[in-house]
Image (cartoon, rainbow, N blue to C red; front, top):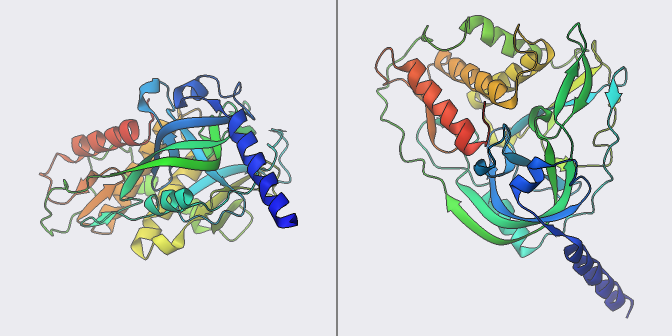
Length: 363
């Protein structure tokens, strides 16, 4: 009898949660993320998972960031999510402002729909050559969960020191985060990875025309912060679960020279050998650009930061004599068979298309 009453209570609570959910669109939320903060919403939208992306995307919003970061509640232990990401967190010695953390969300139950959702978004794509963070499917679904909304911003003082951190997801670049409580109406869409041009097998050098001022210096900047993960530089590495826990948004127990902790999370089961090293260079570029931005990059947006990271990733791969490099959505950003002189235009076209169409970013 007690078990029956408990089941009835939980069912009633679930019905109450869905009754209180506000129907909204991705664009509604992104136009007023702080107005939706703390609200339970129901969204019909497309979810994409990638290298450092796990987001509900709608490219029709016309905003610099046309995506909501998607997270699971603590203890979900899902397989889907970004393969790697970096989040900024105030250290124990951080002297700037710290936002009040959201309340811990309820545990997400493993329903048949959730299992399908998780399985689809964690299925790797089958492709020729290196394909970093490439998932076989994107998923259209009805998502219900709590919105955490803010203004994503890395505030700096006159000296360039970080004095304020807000935002969600990779690089804290997202104004809104959806903490999932249920998913239904799942429709998978298989991503087309059949278009990469044929390779020639030729070994190549880093092309001088790639759009970085000094490719070797750029790669050095990317490798330096991650190369000293064990130490007191405030870069920590862990296993990527993409779960919102009770300590989300609070100060870290660790300290760093500037009071900022860069939590670098990697799903090492999906990254082996050179792929892992290449992804660490990608994350290292993010850390370098956020911690020690070059002149003119102090207030760079997510589009610029991701663009630079993918260029660095391509340069690293070329240095490792990769024949091709494909990124989520089927965009080829490097191919050793490209005619000499086409590197810049091909790379720029592929990365720009990926960022605007796949990741929902604009300049």
